[in-house]
Image (cartoon, rainbow, N blue to C red):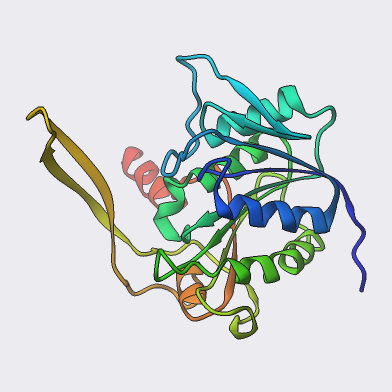
Length: 257
């Protein structure tokens, strides 16, 4: 069935205004909407989560019609876009397409997901999108480009709560090899810890370099990691509420003893 076009979409990312994934997302958004706004970070802001720049001013540069870069975080971009640059609220916010999957606990650190969560906070239906890869020099952008329009249309045709955004991941396979869209849970993911490397610069001053340690780990069959690593497309509903109800009740019970 044909889907009606969206009036307006705001897109952003965490890889920066010149990232190839943002170019892909712009093309996807133009298939879906009459009007596409781009508000993205001036520089790569990966791993910055939902951070807001509250200790220094933000600069905005015009990069074209309805296209802007911001000297801040993805969350800053969403806030400035929605509160200053757009003349009316968009019907949808899309964040990505991230170079690399955002799976499991890594969603807590992801600037791509952080931007979508900020859109959620400000009252706009929001979807984060990421392209999984096994080789950094061979990211299958064609997969996200081919699959994203229909995936987004299908998701928009469903009903989800106003306090939820969606986290979508595309698999590291050719478009025709991709499995169907599946609604998943966050699961464990592939993040196995953080590594800190100590080095010395040319002036013999010490510095540290942080990187994420990733390994294959057992996960639920309905988790986003399992689905994506087995060639499917995952969509996970995420929300700000992270209370562990079982532990909360156990602690309350202990308090009353």
